[in-house]
Length: 99
Image 1 (cartoon, rainbow, N blue to C red):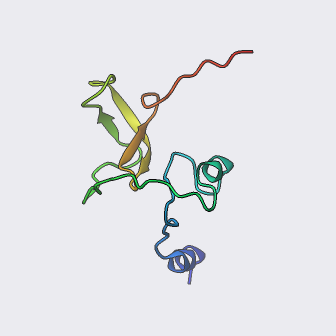
Image 2: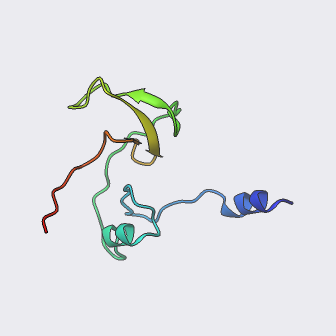
């Protein structure tokens, strides 16, 4: 058996612990661990799951609503647990960092 097939079979379906808040950081990073400390209970975010995803990483999409409506961008990340799609250069928050 190939190593990749063995790892996929061993992983199965990965589920997040109850009360875990999804974000743009990977679950094992320090930023995600700060957002989800052990023992902290958070309100559940109501998200109606999309039955069939037609958007994949690398696709070019157009924004329909919001301040960036009409702009096109390339999908860099898809977070299905929160129904989020992150586009290159469009869904960014610019913050000024002083000296």
